[in-house]
Amino acid sequence: MKTRLLLLGGTTESLALADRLAGDGRVEVITSLAGRTVAHRLPPGHLRVGGFGGAAGLSAYLREERIGLVIDATHPFAATISRNAAAACAEVGVPRLQVLRPEWTAGPGDRWIEVADMTAAAAALPGLGATAFLAVGRQELPAFAGLEGIRLIARMVDAPSEPLPLGTWDIILARGPFALADEEALIARYGVDVVVSKNSGGAPTYAKIAAARTRGLPVVMIGRPAPPPGKQAGSVDEALIWLTHTLTR
Ligand code: NAP
Image 1 (tube, protein in one colour):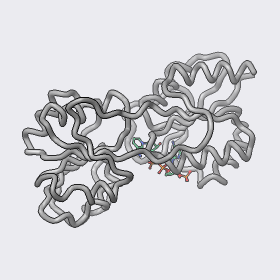
Image 2 (spheres, rainbow, N blue to C red; image 1 turned 120 degrees about the horizontal axis):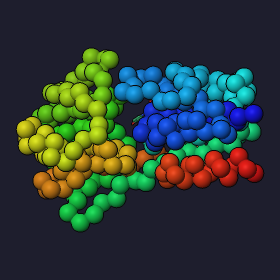
Image 3 (cartoon, rainbow, N blue to C red; image 1 turned 135 degrees about the vertical axis):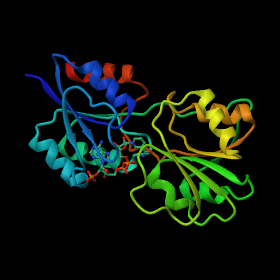
Image 4 (cartoon, rainbow, N blue to C red; image 1 turned 45 degrees about the vertical axis):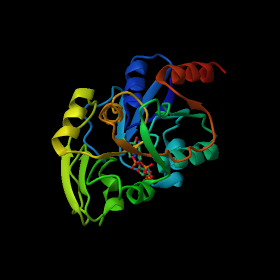
């Protein structure tokens, strides 16, 4: 009988894992999405959408659905679901792996101002220029409310669901991957002085960081929340090795 694998998703890694495990004779994959954004492509295999109702709800789901393994391939900044997955898997006794792509690191020519969170990112902006490009997601806009004298260019996948916070905003709706030439053009078109980014890691959204470097601009780089303790994989390939190892144990 196949082992039921819950794949917590919403990332390119979760889609790639679902693709690589499609037709795998060992596991039946159920991808779970939060349902906040409209998915541009649905994964193969089973799909469920929406929250579980906290760690307790996720524990109940693991039991009811007889889940044998969990791979948490959510975004490095999706801290709540990862914490809940760790707690629920520990309670129910289900092996769990967190897929965490490597962080970006500053190299020669980069002018990074590293901060711990969104509030610190907003506090760092005054003095860095008149126009800031925020590539942080629509949920994070309130942290930048009321920054006087700074024009905020905010890029996100879906339009904000709430009224915009106080400030001067330009909203760009776009979904990655983004090319270096396009990011450079965006910086030039809007006269961007500073880029604000989460340290998401990965290639599809790195071009804005490279574009800031080529244009000599500072980047306010927001550090990741601490992941819960437990097994981690840095790539899809590593996750598949863990899966084989765990299934044959
Ligand atoms: P979060 O703050 O960690 O989670 C908030 C709540 O959303 C969770 O408590 C859970 O609700 C629900 N949730 C999150 N991911 C879920 C999933 N894969 N399946 C079912 N429920 C889920 O998460 P977030 O930062 O809002 O991110 C939401 C989703 O977007 C994640 O799946 C993540 O991979 C993806 N994403 C996030 C970012 C980012 O920068 N944060 C970027 C790209 C993609 P319950 O407590 O009710 O279970």
